[in-house]
Image 1 (spheres, rainbow, N blue to C red):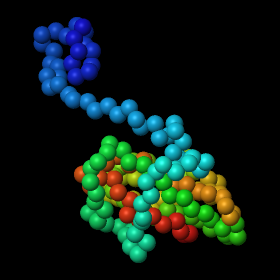
Image 2 (cartoon, one colour; image 1 turned 120 degrees about the vertical axis):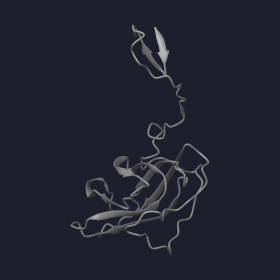
Image 3 (tube, helix red, strand yellow; image 1 turned 60 degrees about the vertical axis):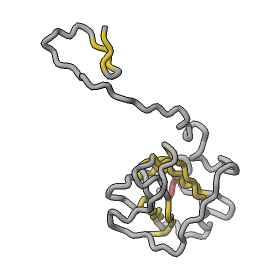
Image 4 (cartoon, one colour; image 1 turned 90 degrees about the vertical axis):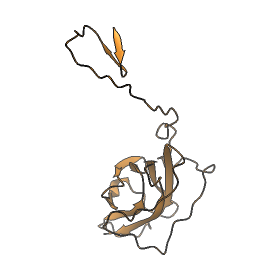
Length: 164
């Protein structure tokens, strides 16, 4: 049996074409953010680096090529944002997350996957299902992003939780 590009082949005749180029693979073993509870509300982020978001920047609703740029310094970068929704919020209100970021990856609300952030396009508005939100003083909600770096890095410039 012969191994070609990580695929074992057996019984190939001399007339059978096969892949002749050796592929190089990347393996990341430290991507266990889901297993470690990064997306949960009871996770302690005390060892994490705190960053400031640009609160004066209006998050664009459309447009490509205006994503923030940063350095490529890791395979995957995790971001967390915590927020509260008042107990007296109208129960009929629908909530959304607006985001301006670079990088490709997944987004979580209180441990539930709410979608994929893809730099190209990009989608900047995500629905936050009320059944996964915590309402009231002291009841924390957590948005978590696990972003794979692109040519622009993986940078979050702005996030906003708002009603529709």
